[in-house]
Amino acid sequence: MTKLSIVLAVLALGCVIGCSVPSHRKMVTLPGPAGRPVTCFEPPPDVMAGGGIAKVDANIPKVIEALKVDAETTVTYQRIRAEVPNLQATETVEFRLCAMYANGIVTPEQYQRFLTVLPLLRRGAPAAPVGATGGATPSPAKESVRTKIGSNFAVSADGCKDTARTFTVTATGRLDTSRGGQGGAPMGFDFVITGNNSHGVRDASATGNSVTFTLHAEGRGTNQGVFGCVGAEGANAAADVYAWVQPQ
Image (tube, rainbow, N blue to C red; front, side, top):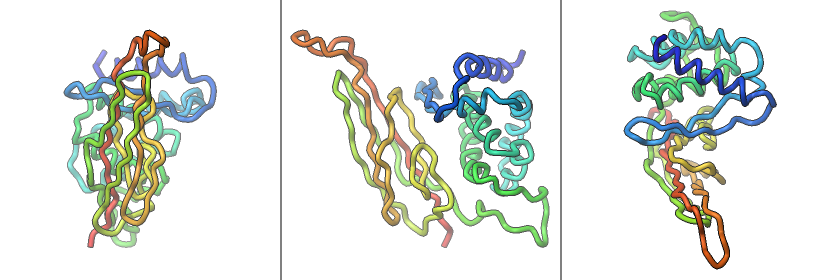
């Protein structure tokens, strides 16, 4: 059995055990490249409990093959859309690829290409045939670029008390507010969250080209009165911030 098959089987088993009741998407933290944790979002349990997941998993290798090619974003999107036909499949593929990135099966470059086309997949934009010309409508992906505007915004807690820090970062250029929203970010922006913290980003809002957000780190100790904080674990969260900027 290949490494890819093993990872898919383990992920599927986890959903059989824990995904029977519909709810919001659960955040899970996995050990990632260079020892840096990676935060992934499971599909809603009702999606995982429904049919068709096996077919989505069967198409994962084709999605990865599309991501291996350094092609225009529009071409990459068209190839992936052919294998990921709807929002439910997109949520499943998003989680699978995030876990594979954490396990080293998907490279950082391939995962970045997927994140670039993810907003289009979520919106369900139709895919023109690969190589189509003439009357084909240009994809919005060609009109805006996902650009990192800040990195390593971090907060940590060591004890029983929750810790929070608020940050503001500003993009240059004209935002495309039809895209974005990853990691709890307002439209026009994406957050990529790492760390071992279960709280992460809260209270994110955008004003013009600026986004303000609060990172929360959860105090995980137990207050034992006169004995103070017992069993404390260091909790941390970090965020990279991206903006969808339209070319001048």
